[in-house]
Length: 126
Image: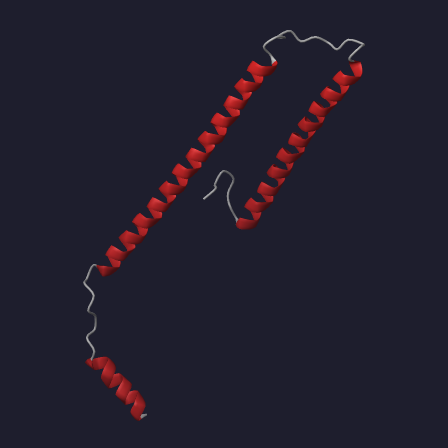
């Protein structure tokens, strides 16, 4: 009992607050500005990475067109002499296309599961 009275006496003798009236508002404004800066940095980084990858893909496409299609712009069906080589080349292209479709489908499926799990609405990524 005596300890409780001592604690109450000490608490009453202390100043109520040494903080200014607008302290909480200033802190919340600083936190808000820090969050806005972090989001801006993330958006700029995402934009830079997206631009870099896009430019890389465009330059790779230009290089491929320049390097492989300079001599022959006309699509020709394979002749009987090169039939096995052409079939293997085309089958590899079909194989890659099927893999791309499977990966895009898996990406869509897992994104929908992730959105349902996290409670996100469609089109929101925040």
